[in-house]
Image 1 (cartoon, rainbow, N blue to C red):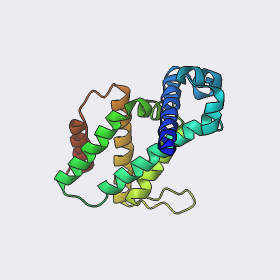
Image 2: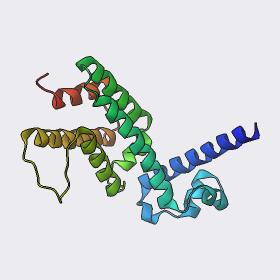
Image 3: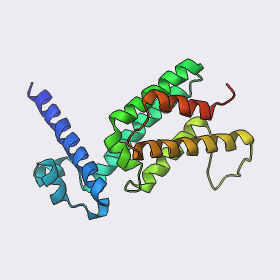
Image 4: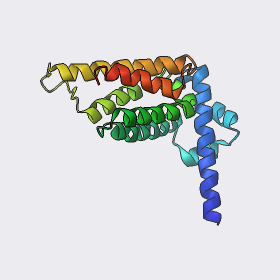
Length: 186
């Protein structure tokens, strides 16, 4: 019983720290955020912070890693060649998750977020759909590859715009828009 209580307390502490960091990142760049300030916002002491993370960048990295892990799973489900209705349902689920995690994602995918994280999102999507953008390898000017690069960049840009504008469309509307833009002929 004690172990479950500790685990729950640990999860709560991590959640409060993550939420507090995101709130602070909405106000200023991460390089200007101190651990003291973060701990005050989260209402925890510094030793508790250090029992979970080495520094603020470690905390941000953990948030980004969790987000990338979720994104990889969502994209894998979508790439299973579903029917139009199945794809729309999967996309709607993805957008619903984006809504539920919008506080984090609005920062991670904005100008305040880490540009390396945003590059990792693109790389993850490209890898999942089989597009290789390695500078060391010969570029393939194949129309299909160019199409996917265009769709991925446009879709991510549209999602960033949607997040920045306060989620002004429903998950279902966004799923339909992205699907129709990505697969106009189907």
